[in-house]
Length: 429
Ligand code: UD1
Image (tube, rainbow, N blue to C red):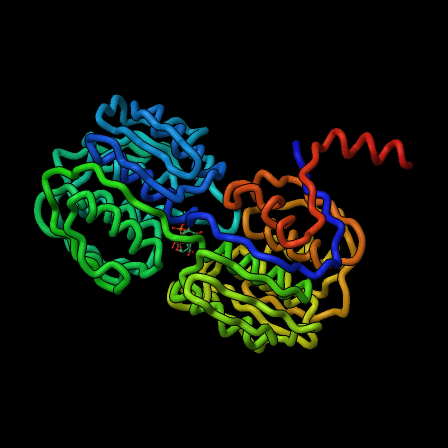
Protein backbone atom coordinates (compact mmCIF):
# COMPACT_ATOMS: atom_id res chain seq x y z
CA UNK A 1 0.00 0.00 0.00
CA UNK A 2 1.22 3.47 -0.84
CA UNK A 3 0.65 6.83 0.78
CA UNK A 4 1.38 10.48 0.12
CA UNK A 5 3.65 12.37 2.47
CA UNK A 6 3.21 16.12 2.17
CA UNK A 7 5.24 18.92 3.72
CA UNK A 8 2.79 21.74 3.30
CA UNK A 9 2.50 25.51 3.58
CA UNK A 10 4.38 26.29 0.36
CA UNK A 11 2.88 28.65 -2.24
CA UNK A 12 2.38 26.70 -5.43
CA UNK A 13 4.14 28.35 -8.33
CA UNK A 14 4.82 27.18 -11.89
CA UNK A 15 3.11 25.55 -14.85
CA UNK A 16 1.20 22.31 -15.34
CA UNK A 17 -0.82 20.79 -18.14
CA UNK A 18 -4.08 18.89 -17.96
CA UNK A 19 -4.39 15.27 -18.94
CA UNK A 20 -7.44 13.92 -20.77
CA UNK A 21 -10.74 13.77 -18.93
CA UNK A 22 -11.37 10.55 -17.03
CA UNK A 23 -15.12 10.93 -17.42
CA UNK A 24 -14.73 11.27 -21.15
CA UNK A 25 -12.13 8.56 -21.70
CA UNK A 26 -14.18 5.89 -19.91
CA UNK A 27 -17.38 6.15 -22.02
CA UNK A 28 -15.38 6.58 -25.22
CA UNK A 29 -13.40 3.41 -24.48
CA UNK A 30 -16.64 1.51 -23.77
CA UNK A 31 -18.04 2.79 -27.06
CA UNK A 32 -15.00 1.39 -28.90
CA UNK A 33 -16.69 -1.99 -28.44
CA UNK A 34 -19.20 -0.97 -31.16
CA UNK A 35 -16.51 -0.48 -33.79
CA UNK A 36 -15.45 -3.56 -35.78
CA UNK A 37 -11.87 -2.36 -36.19
CA UNK A 38 -9.18 -0.27 -34.54
CA UNK A 39 -10.14 2.89 -32.68
CA UNK A 40 -7.25 5.23 -31.88
CA UNK A 41 -7.81 7.35 -28.80
CA UNK A 42 -5.37 10.18 -28.09
CA UNK A 43 -4.92 12.07 -24.81
CA UNK A 44 -6.19 9.02 -22.94
CA UNK A 45 -4.97 9.43 -19.34
CA UNK A 46 -3.10 6.59 -17.67
CA UNK A 47 -5.44 6.21 -14.69
CA UNK A 48 -6.35 3.08 -12.77
CA UNK A 49 -10.00 3.41 -13.94
CA UNK A 50 -8.80 3.57 -17.55
CA UNK A 51 -6.58 0.53 -17.02
CA UNK A 52 -9.55 -1.35 -15.52
CA UNK A 53 -11.71 -0.42 -18.54
CA UNK A 54 -9.02 -1.65 -20.93
CA UNK A 55 -8.80 -4.92 -18.96
CA UNK A 56 -12.56 -5.44 -19.40
CA UNK A 57 -12.23 -4.78 -23.14
CA UNK A 58 -9.41 -7.35 -23.32
CA UNK A 59 -11.49 -9.91 -21.44
CA UNK A 60 -14.27 -9.36 -23.98
CA UNK A 61 -11.86 -10.29 -26.78
CA UNK A 62 -10.53 -6.88 -27.87
CA UNK A 63 -6.85 -6.16 -28.42
CA UNK A 64 -5.67 -3.06 -26.62
CA UNK A 65 -2.34 -1.24 -26.61
CA UNK A 66 -1.01 1.97 -25.09
CA UNK A 67 1.81 4.13 -26.42
CA UNK A 68 2.24 7.21 -24.27
CA UNK A 69 -1.19 8.77 -24.03
CA UNK A 70 -2.51 7.07 -27.17
CA UNK A 71 -4.57 3.95 -26.73
CA UNK A 72 -5.68 1.67 -29.53
CA UNK A 73 -8.62 -0.65 -29.11
CA UNK A 74 -9.21 -3.27 -31.77
CA UNK A 75 -12.73 -4.63 -31.34
CA UNK A 76 -12.83 -6.58 -34.62
CA UNK A 77 -13.41 -9.75 -32.59
CA UNK A 78 -15.68 -9.64 -29.56
CA UNK A 79 -15.84 -13.06 -27.97
CA UNK A 80 -17.97 -12.59 -24.88
CA UNK A 81 -20.79 -10.65 -23.30
CA UNK A 82 -20.20 -11.28 -19.59
CA UNK A 83 -18.23 -9.16 -17.14
CA UNK A 84 -17.43 -10.65 -13.74
CA UNK A 85 -18.57 -9.02 -10.53
CA UNK A 86 -15.11 -7.99 -9.30
CA UNK A 87 -14.44 -6.08 -12.52
CA UNK A 88 -17.86 -4.45 -12.54
CA UNK A 89 -17.28 -3.26 -8.99
CA UNK A 90 -14.01 -1.48 -9.78
CA UNK A 91 -15.83 1.63 -11.04
CA UNK A 92 -19.22 3.14 -11.67
CA UNK A 93 -18.70 3.62 -15.39
CA UNK A 94 -18.54 -0.16 -15.95
CA UNK A 95 -22.35 0.11 -16.29
CA UNK A 96 -21.73 1.71 -19.72
CA UNK A 97 -20.68 -1.72 -20.98
CA UNK A 98 -24.39 -2.58 -20.73
CA UNK A 99 -25.31 -0.44 -23.73
CA UNK A 100 -22.12 -1.32 -25.59
CA UNK A 101 -22.48 -5.11 -25.16
CA UNK A 102 -26.18 -5.10 -26.07
CA UNK A 103 -25.51 -3.12 -29.21
CA UNK A 104 -22.57 -5.27 -30.26
CA UNK A 105 -23.69 -8.76 -29.21
CA UNK A 106 -27.40 -8.55 -28.32
CA UNK A 107 -26.59 -9.82 -24.82
CA UNK A 108 -25.09 -8.54 -21.58
CA UNK A 109 -24.47 -10.45 -18.37
CA UNK A 110 -23.17 -7.95 -15.87
CA UNK A 111 -23.39 -6.96 -12.19
CA UNK A 112 -24.22 -3.77 -10.36
CA UNK A 113 -21.28 -1.40 -10.73
CA UNK A 114 -19.07 -0.07 -7.94
CA UNK A 115 -17.35 3.30 -7.76
CA UNK A 116 -16.95 5.99 -5.13
CA UNK A 117 -19.08 5.65 -2.02
CA UNK A 118 -20.78 9.04 -2.26
CA UNK A 119 -24.42 7.99 -2.33
CA UNK A 120 -26.68 5.06 -3.16
CA UNK A 121 -26.01 5.51 -6.89
CA UNK A 122 -28.73 3.23 -8.30
CA UNK A 123 -28.88 2.24 -12.00
CA UNK A 124 -32.67 2.31 -12.36
CA UNK A 125 -32.58 5.04 -15.02
CA UNK A 126 -30.11 3.02 -17.10
CA UNK A 127 -32.21 -0.16 -16.90
CA UNK A 128 -35.51 1.59 -17.62
CA UNK A 129 -34.01 3.29 -20.68
CA UNK A 130 -32.50 0.05 -21.94
CA UNK A 131 -35.91 -1.68 -21.59
CA UNK A 132 -37.46 1.16 -23.64
CA UNK A 133 -34.94 0.36 -26.37
CA UNK A 134 -36.36 -3.15 -26.79
CA UNK A 135 -34.16 -5.07 -24.37
CA UNK A 136 -35.43 -7.67 -21.91
CA UNK A 137 -33.81 -7.24 -18.51
CA UNK A 138 -33.65 -9.78 -15.70
CA UNK A 139 -32.33 -8.75 -12.32
CA UNK A 140 -31.27 -11.32 -9.77
CA UNK A 141 -29.68 -9.75 -6.73
CA UNK A 142 -26.68 -7.83 -8.06
CA UNK A 143 -26.68 -9.80 -11.33
CA UNK A 144 -28.22 -8.21 -14.44
CA UNK A 145 -28.90 -10.34 -17.53
CA UNK A 146 -30.10 -8.63 -20.68
CA UNK A 147 -30.93 -9.77 -24.16
CA UNK A 148 -32.30 -8.18 -27.31
CA UNK A 149 -33.07 -9.13 -30.89
CA UNK A 150 -31.81 -5.66 -31.85
CA UNK A 151 -31.94 -2.19 -30.30
CA UNK A 152 -35.04 -0.28 -31.41
CA UNK A 153 -35.26 3.49 -31.28
CA UNK A 154 -37.57 5.03 -28.65
CA UNK A 155 -38.44 8.26 -26.91
CA UNK A 156 -36.85 8.27 -23.46
CA UNK A 157 -37.67 10.88 -20.86
CA UNK A 158 -35.08 11.00 -18.08
CA UNK A 159 -36.56 12.18 -14.76
CA UNK A 160 -33.07 13.39 -13.85
CA UNK A 161 -30.35 14.46 -16.30
CA UNK A 162 -28.11 11.51 -15.44
CA UNK A 163 -24.71 11.62 -17.12
CA UNK A 164 -24.25 7.85 -17.15
CA UNK A 165 -27.80 7.06 -18.31
CA UNK A 166 -27.51 9.59 -21.16
CA UNK A 167 -24.20 7.99 -22.21
CA UNK A 168 -25.57 4.46 -21.98
CA UNK A 169 -28.53 5.37 -24.21
CA UNK A 170 -26.25 7.10 -26.74
CA UNK A 171 -23.95 4.07 -26.88
CA UNK A 172 -26.82 1.58 -27.12
CA UNK A 173 -28.79 3.53 -29.72
CA UNK A 174 -25.93 4.62 -32.01
CA UNK A 175 -26.25 1.34 -33.93
CA UNK A 176 -29.97 0.57 -33.92
CA UNK A 177 -33.18 0.56 -35.93
CA UNK A 178 -35.10 3.84 -35.90
CA UNK A 179 -34.74 7.06 -34.01
CA UNK A 180 -34.10 7.59 -30.31
CA UNK A 181 -34.91 10.84 -28.56
CA UNK A 182 -33.55 11.58 -25.09
CA UNK A 183 -35.54 14.23 -23.25
CA UNK A 184 -33.80 15.90 -20.29
CA UNK A 185 -30.42 14.57 -21.40
CA UNK A 186 -27.30 15.47 -19.43
CA UNK A 187 -25.37 18.36 -21.03
CA UNK A 188 -21.88 17.81 -19.62
CA UNK A 189 -18.88 18.38 -21.94
CA UNK A 190 -18.13 14.65 -21.66
CA UNK A 191 -21.50 13.92 -23.33
CA UNK A 192 -20.45 16.11 -26.27
CA UNK A 193 -17.09 14.34 -26.46
CA UNK A 194 -18.75 10.93 -26.59
CA UNK A 195 -21.14 12.16 -29.32
CA UNK A 196 -18.20 13.57 -31.28
CA UNK A 197 -16.37 10.24 -31.10
CA UNK A 198 -19.44 8.25 -32.15
CA UNK A 199 -20.28 10.69 -34.95
CA UNK A 200 -16.71 10.43 -36.28
CA UNK A 201 -17.35 6.69 -36.42
CA UNK A 202 -20.46 7.33 -38.53
CA UNK A 203 -23.17 7.61 -35.88
CA UNK A 204 -25.90 10.24 -36.31
CA UNK A 205 -26.25 11.93 -32.95
CA UNK A 206 -27.67 15.45 -32.87
CA UNK A 207 -28.09 17.93 -30.04
CA UNK A 208 -25.38 16.70 -27.62
CA UNK A 209 -24.83 19.47 -25.08
CA UNK A 210 -28.50 20.38 -25.19
CA UNK A 211 -31.42 19.04 -23.19
CA UNK A 212 -32.77 16.96 -26.09
CA UNK A 213 -30.57 14.53 -28.00
CA UNK A 214 -31.70 12.77 -31.16
CA UNK A 215 -30.02 9.62 -32.38
CA UNK A 216 -30.76 8.20 -35.80
CA UNK A 217 -29.66 4.60 -35.60
CA UNK A 218 -27.10 3.49 -38.20
CA UNK A 219 -26.20 -0.04 -39.31
CA UNK A 220 -22.49 -0.02 -38.61
CA UNK A 221 -19.71 2.17 -37.21
CA UNK A 222 -16.29 2.58 -38.80
CA UNK A 223 -12.97 3.07 -36.98
CA UNK A 224 -11.73 6.60 -36.27
CA UNK A 225 -9.12 8.59 -34.34
CA UNK A 226 -10.27 10.75 -31.49
CA UNK A 227 -8.67 13.09 -28.94
CA UNK A 228 -10.15 13.14 -25.45
CA UNK A 229 -11.04 16.59 -24.07
CA UNK A 230 -8.95 18.00 -21.19
CA UNK A 231 -10.00 17.13 -17.65
CA UNK A 232 -11.97 20.08 -16.25
CA UNK A 233 -12.09 18.51 -12.77
CA UNK A 234 -8.30 18.24 -12.74
CA UNK A 235 -8.21 21.95 -13.65
CA UNK A 236 -10.42 22.81 -10.69
CA UNK A 237 -8.17 20.65 -8.47
CA UNK A 238 -5.09 22.69 -9.44
CA UNK A 239 -7.07 25.91 -9.04
CA UNK A 240 -8.13 24.86 -5.53
CA UNK A 241 -4.57 23.88 -4.57
CA UNK A 242 -3.28 27.22 -5.86
CA UNK A 243 -6.04 29.12 -4.03
CA UNK A 244 -5.44 27.29 -0.73
CA UNK A 245 -1.68 27.95 -0.80
CA UNK A 246 -1.74 31.58 -1.95
CA UNK A 247 0.02 30.51 -5.13
CA UNK A 248 0.45 31.71 -8.67
CA UNK A 249 0.21 29.03 -11.37
CA UNK A 250 -0.45 28.55 -15.06
CA UNK A 251 -2.62 25.64 -16.20
CA UNK A 252 -2.16 24.66 -19.84
CA UNK A 253 -4.43 22.74 -22.22
CA UNK A 254 -7.64 24.01 -20.68
CA UNK A 255 -10.97 24.43 -22.39
CA UNK A 256 -12.23 27.67 -20.84
CA UNK A 257 -15.91 27.13 -21.67
CA UNK A 258 -15.89 23.87 -19.69
CA UNK A 259 -14.63 25.78 -16.66
CA UNK A 260 -17.07 28.68 -16.86
CA UNK A 261 -19.18 27.27 -13.97
CA UNK A 262 -16.19 27.33 -11.60
CA UNK A 263 -14.55 30.64 -12.59
CA UNK A 264 -17.03 32.86 -10.69
CA UNK A 265 -16.42 30.90 -7.47
CA UNK A 266 -12.66 31.44 -7.65
CA UNK A 267 -13.23 35.11 -8.47
CA UNK A 268 -15.46 35.40 -5.42
CA UNK A 269 -12.65 33.86 -3.33
CA UNK A 270 -10.42 36.72 -4.49
CA UNK A 271 -8.37 34.79 -7.06
CA UNK A 272 -7.41 36.62 -10.21
CA UNK A 273 -7.85 34.57 -13.38
CA UNK A 274 -6.20 35.43 -16.69
CA UNK A 275 -7.10 33.50 -19.81
CA UNK A 276 -4.72 33.30 -22.72
CA UNK A 277 -6.07 30.85 -25.30
CA UNK A 278 -5.78 27.41 -23.73
CA UNK A 279 -3.73 28.70 -20.76
CA UNK A 280 -5.17 29.92 -17.50
CA UNK A 281 -3.13 31.92 -15.00
CA UNK A 282 -4.42 31.80 -11.43
CA UNK A 283 -3.14 34.30 -8.88
CA UNK A 284 -4.44 33.68 -5.39
CA UNK A 285 -4.65 36.38 -2.73
CA UNK A 286 -2.70 36.07 0.54
CA UNK A 287 -5.94 35.14 2.29
CA UNK A 288 -8.98 33.84 0.43
CA UNK A 289 -12.39 35.43 0.87
CA UNK A 290 -15.38 33.32 1.77
CA UNK A 291 -18.04 32.58 -0.84
CA UNK A 292 -21.72 33.00 -0.04
CA UNK A 293 -23.30 29.78 -1.27
CA UNK A 294 -22.21 27.23 -3.84
CA UNK A 295 -24.86 24.84 -5.13
CA UNK A 296 -23.78 21.78 -7.07
CA UNK A 297 -26.01 21.07 -10.07
CA UNK A 298 -25.81 19.36 -13.45
CA UNK A 299 -23.75 21.18 -16.11
CA UNK A 300 -23.66 24.09 -16.90
CA UNK A 301 -23.83 24.77 -13.14
CA UNK A 302 -21.12 24.15 -10.52
CA UNK A 303 -19.91 20.51 -10.79
CA UNK A 304 -20.30 18.17 -7.83
CA UNK A 305 -16.88 16.67 -8.63
CA UNK A 306 -15.15 20.02 -7.91
CA UNK A 307 -16.99 20.49 -4.64
CA UNK A 308 -14.59 18.65 -2.25
CA UNK A 309 -11.44 20.44 -3.46
CA UNK A 310 -13.12 23.85 -3.35
CA UNK A 311 -14.40 23.07 0.15
CA UNK A 312 -10.81 22.29 1.21
CA UNK A 313 -9.62 25.66 -0.13
CA UNK A 314 -12.45 27.50 1.62
CA UNK A 315 -11.30 26.04 4.95
CA UNK A 316 -8.58 28.72 5.01
CA UNK A 317 -10.77 31.57 3.70
CA UNK A 318 -11.76 34.55 5.83
CA UNK A 319 -15.37 34.12 6.88
CA UNK A 320 -18.05 31.49 6.52
CA UNK A 321 -18.96 29.77 3.26
CA UNK A 322 -21.85 27.44 2.55
CA UNK A 323 -22.00 24.54 0.10
CA UNK A 324 -25.19 22.75 -0.88
CA UNK A 325 -24.62 19.38 -2.52
CA UNK A 326 -27.53 18.59 -4.83
CA UNK A 327 -26.26 15.60 -6.83
CA UNK A 328 -25.01 12.97 -4.38
CA UNK A 329 -26.59 12.56 -0.95
CA UNK A 330 -23.40 11.39 0.75
CA UNK A 331 -20.68 13.53 -0.73
CA UNK A 332 -19.33 15.10 2.47
CA UNK A 333 -17.76 11.89 3.83
CA UNK A 334 -14.29 13.44 3.52
CA UNK A 335 -15.14 16.33 5.86
CA UNK A 336 -14.34 14.44 9.07
CA UNK A 337 -10.82 13.86 7.70
CA UNK A 338 -10.58 17.50 6.61
CA UNK A 339 -11.38 18.61 10.15
CA UNK A 340 -8.32 16.67 11.37
CA UNK A 341 -6.23 19.42 9.77
CA UNK A 342 -7.92 21.88 12.15
CA UNK A 343 -10.56 22.90 9.63
CA UNK A 344 -13.96 23.90 10.96
CA UNK A 345 -16.58 22.39 8.67
CA UNK A 346 -20.03 21.40 9.92
CA UNK A 347 -22.14 19.09 7.81
CA UNK A 348 -25.88 18.81 8.09
CA UNK A 349 -27.19 16.31 5.56
CA UNK A 350 -26.36 17.84 2.16
CA UNK A 351 -25.29 21.22 3.51
CA UNK A 352 -21.76 22.09 4.62
CA UNK A 353 -20.95 25.24 6.58
CA UNK A 354 -17.27 26.10 6.34
CA UNK A 355 -15.99 28.44 9.01
CA UNK A 356 -12.67 29.59 7.61
CA UNK A 357 -9.63 29.27 9.91
CA UNK A 358 -6.33 31.16 9.65
CA UNK A 359 -4.23 28.06 9.21
CA UNK A 360 -4.40 24.30 8.92
CA UNK A 361 -1.99 21.92 10.65
CA UNK A 362 -0.52 18.71 9.18
CA UNK A 363 -2.56 15.57 9.87
CA UNK A 364 -2.62 11.85 9.16
CA UNK A 365 -5.71 11.10 7.12
CA UNK A 366 -7.35 8.49 4.89
CA UNK A 367 -8.86 9.10 1.47
CA UNK A 368 -12.35 7.58 1.33
CA UNK A 369 -13.16 8.39 -2.30
CA UNK A 370 -11.55 9.95 -5.36
CA UNK A 371 -12.44 13.65 -5.10
CA UNK A 372 -12.59 13.56 -1.30
CA UNK A 373 -9.00 12.28 -1.49
CA UNK A 374 -8.05 15.18 -3.76
CA UNK A 375 -9.55 17.56 -1.18
CA UNK A 376 -7.22 16.07 1.44
CA UNK A 377 -4.24 16.78 -0.84
CA UNK A 378 -5.36 20.41 -1.14
CA UNK A 379 -5.64 20.68 2.65
CA UNK A 380 -2.25 19.00 3.20
CA UNK A 381 -0.59 21.40 0.73
CA UNK A 382 -2.02 24.37 2.65
CA UNK A 383 -1.30 22.99 6.13
CA UNK A 384 1.74 23.82 8.23
CA UNK A 385 3.88 20.75 8.91
CA UNK A 386 3.78 17.20 7.61
CA UNK A 387 0.73 15.21 6.57
CA UNK A 388 0.20 11.67 5.40
CA UNK A 389 -2.68 10.61 3.18
CA UNK A 390 -3.41 6.90 3.03
CA UNK A 391 -5.71 4.80 0.77
CA UNK A 392 -4.47 6.82 -2.18
CA UNK A 393 -5.62 4.17 -4.64
CA UNK A 394 -8.87 6.15 -4.61
CA UNK A 395 -6.96 9.20 -5.86
CA UNK A 396 -5.10 7.21 -8.55
CA UNK A 397 -8.46 6.34 -10.10
CA UNK A 398 -8.77 9.85 -11.48
CA UNK A 399 -5.37 11.54 -11.28
CA UNK A 400 -2.31 10.39 -13.25
CA UNK A 401 0.79 10.71 -11.02
CA UNK A 402 -0.68 13.72 -9.24
CA UNK A 403 2.34 13.97 -6.94
CA UNK A 404 4.72 14.43 -9.90
CA UNK A 405 2.50 17.14 -11.37
CA UNK A 406 2.25 18.97 -8.05
CA UNK A 407 6.04 18.76 -7.62
CA UNK A 408 6.30 20.77 -10.87
CA UNK A 409 4.44 23.50 -8.97
CA UNK A 410 6.93 23.39 -6.10
CA UNK A 411 4.87 21.17 -3.78
CA UNK A 412 6.73 18.85 -1.43
CA UNK A 413 4.69 15.68 -1.93
CA UNK A 414 6.09 12.16 -2.16
CA UNK A 415 4.50 8.80 -2.87
CA UNK A 416 5.95 6.30 -0.46
CA UNK A 417 5.37 2.73 0.49
CA UNK A 418 3.29 2.30 3.63
CA UNK A 419 5.70 -0.28 5.09
CA UNK A 420 8.68 2.06 4.62
CA UNK A 421 6.75 4.85 6.27
CA UNK A 422 5.86 2.63 9.25
CA UNK A 423 9.50 1.57 9.65
CA UNK A 424 10.65 5.19 9.62
CA UNK A 425 7.97 6.15 12.15
CA UNK A 426 9.09 3.28 14.42
CA UNK A 427 12.78 4.22 14.14
CA UNK A 428 12.13 7.86 14.96
CA UNK A 429 9.90 7.05 17.95
C1 UD1 B 1 -20.97 10.88 -13.59
C2 UD1 B 1 -19.50 11.05 -13.33
C3 UD1 B 1 -19.26 11.52 -11.91
C4 UD1 B 1 -20.06 12.79 -11.65
C5 UD1 B 1 -21.53 12.60 -12.01
C6 UD1 B 1 -22.34 13.88 -11.91
C7 UD1 B 1 -18.47 9.42 -14.78
C8 UD1 B 1 -17.71 8.15 -14.89
N1 UD1 B 1 -18.83 9.78 -13.54
O1 UD1 B 1 -21.42 9.87 -12.69
O2 UD1 B 1 -17.87 11.79 -11.74
O3 UD1 B 1 -19.97 13.11 -10.28
O4 UD1 B 1 -21.64 12.11 -13.36
O5 UD1 B 1 -21.79 14.87 -12.68
O6 UD1 B 1 -18.70 10.11 -15.75
N2 UD1 B 1 -29.12 8.35 -10.47
C9 UD1 B 1 -30.21 7.57 -10.19
N3 UD1 B 1 -30.47 6.50 -10.99
C10 UD1 B 1 -29.68 6.19 -12.06
C11 UD1 B 1 -28.58 7.00 -12.35
C12 UD1 B 1 -28.32 8.09 -11.54
O7 UD1 B 1 -30.93 7.82 -9.22
O8 UD1 B 1 -29.96 5.20 -12.76
C13 UD1 B 1 -28.81 9.49 -9.59
C14 UD1 B 1 -27.48 9.29 -8.87
O9 UD1 B 1 -27.62 8.50 -7.73
C15 UD1 B 1 -27.07 10.71 -8.55
C16 UD1 B 1 -27.60 11.48 -9.76
O10 UD1 B 1 -28.60 10.65 -10.36
O11 UD1 B 1 -27.72 11.16 -7.39
C17 UD1 B 1 -26.53 11.83 -10.76
O12 UD1 B 1 -25.93 10.67 -11.24
P1 UD1 B 1 -25.32 10.57 -12.71
O13 UD1 B 1 -25.44 11.87 -13.41
O14 UD1 B 1 -25.89 9.37 -13.35
O15 UD1 B 1 -23.79 10.33 -12.36
P2 UD1 B 1 -22.85 9.18 -12.90
O16 UD1 B 1 -23.08 8.97 -14.34
O17 UD1 B 1 -22.89 8.02 -11.98
